[in-house]
Length: 83
Image 1 (cartoon, rainbow, N blue to C red):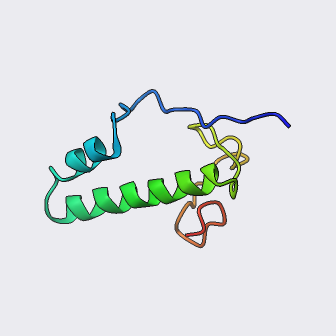
Image 2 (cartoon, helix red, strand yellow):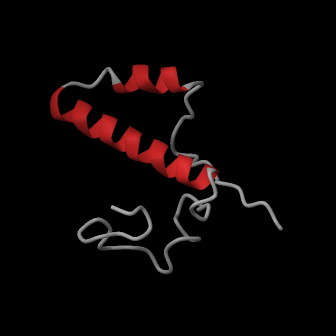
């Protein structure tokens, strides 16, 4: 079986550790902090799902999950991220 790899997104830096990511997120306040923490948590859960073999790995543009993009992403239930 061929091993698939989750490709990093070149537009964003990669934190050195979870603690470094948490420190970065802690710099936000108010509703920005809520959004940052929510996105961090959802991203963690998606990575765990992929690492545990419960989801197909995807490229940054989502090409291995979406066929043609997802313009309505999260405006209704999304089977990709189970949201």
